[in-house]
Image (cartoon, rainbow, N blue to C red; front, side, top):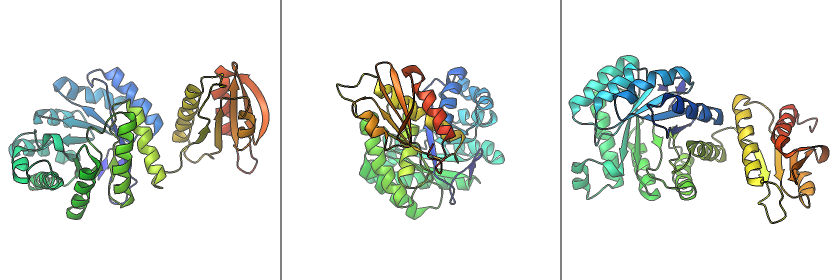
Length: 353
């Protein structure tokens, strides 16, 4: 299966997806957010499509970005048809609220000739009443039964480009549902928790659930759903894949935790360095990856910086730049990130800097 230029399933690399948190009808804001995530390494973007104006906004958005766009459809199947006509790369349909089998067939008639994949997205919070009654609640078995029933509906309509997700808001039920689903189907699976939570709680829950499943070989695309900026979702998703050896290593950045001696905004500085390096390696994936240190204390910073390939130690509006443990320059704090990035770009492992 392909979502635009991104291969999904059948041994393809696991892809990271996020969802725009802008109003899709605001084309400029949505394009700006997608471009930011492209630089971080996001592979697939999902957009909310609440009405016809949002569906028609997909065309100018797609013309301005590189990564595939998936339209998130609820309640009105006609919006899916408009999105397909606007050139969307994929659809996400919640079977609990999209309507009758006839509505699904109409969507398939639009999507199939264009080879637009359809993700069946089953969530514990929007499961059909019949499934809730049959299973006594939104159990893992109910989620899987609903997903497979709707997959058969797409199959009966002649559609085979199918991806499935079965999300709950708790780790154990989500993991069990995906394990059951993986035993019963070969369709690509999109992993995630629904309503995972805020930055800390959501990151932990998603990392535990998705990490367990990915380590078992289950999952083809992932989304870390956070009540936070989508850039954070992408960073966590990529780091999760890196930890499991499913993505090349990212920037190796070490930094001190700060203390009362720090005379620089180290939290901001470390984040700026990490973001700059993420963007550099996204555009230059084969570039060497030195260990980079960001230190905020002129007491311990110089000594700790010697253990890194390239480092900066800031304080009092200035930053000392180190390469291979040797101090090579002192720059203004405002120029520290750019100075460090220039050294990273020129760094060669054999030369040590």
